[in-house]
Length: 382
Image (cartoon, rainbow, N blue to C red; front, side):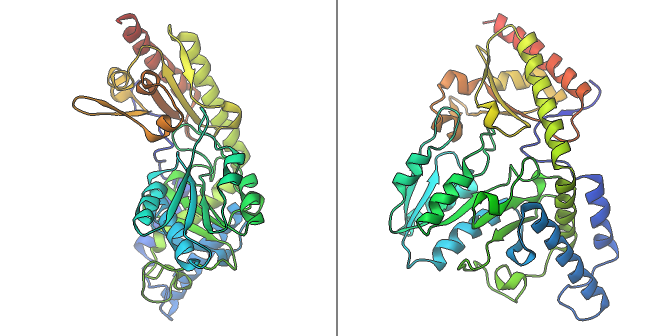
């Protein structure tokens, strides 16, 4: 292996060459303020509106329902706080799940301190919420439901369409964090029955530091920061034009190549799983239902092998994530695996491997060889 085999696309993606090419002129020549009335300002304003259309087209929205943010974390924060603050007359009860990203859970913890009541829905052993639990949790004072579309650690896809139907029946706003799903699987706001949806650019081959938030037309919503009138006054501040353009291009590419990329991600993941099962001389446990999972995500544990030790054995040749964090005298299991009631031994041995559109069969072959060799050495040494 002469180069890094990158298999952590759920953490971040490289910037696509087409995206870099699209944004470059707006870094170099097109520097005008989009709020200016002269030509170089108007040109950049037009570029922003084109990008807004590209983002909207990917998720089945209209351009006026899209605002640009600094990324998925801001989008989640704004979606939740903007919705509940503007709709306090509905109530102060929020429903979410036990496997959400910190960009959702930390907002909910903050709101708890402000007097909101949070219902944390449990999940099954694959990280999926139960629709009966959602129905049971809804109350007359429920202001918002926020459930992620697909989990960043294990890849489990939630029944968002059905949850959206429940929310609509009870007149409750519904937000989904779609950072991991956009660009990998179909993510259509109308089919999903969502009112708010978050996108993170660096998960779909755009730069870090750019994202967007879908706000369904007619939703009562409050801004979090104050300034001039950019982004309909909901997210004021001079726009980050190069990055907005980049996100637009990334969304355009994602829409054009969705089926092709979906097949490729799935094929690479399957080759990886089959290879590891064939070559590893210990039990390989999959932590998700692969029939209801992102096509690129593989959360697996190797019996008798510690994930952090495995990562150090593989070295800098193959990049992947682990399902636990090591401290001086203990191992902290991820909240997601903990919510799934994964036993500590399995959780400590869990790795997340996520493929991308640039992953090749040759890279998968090398990764299988490197990981299985390390797994076999570690399991035999026990």
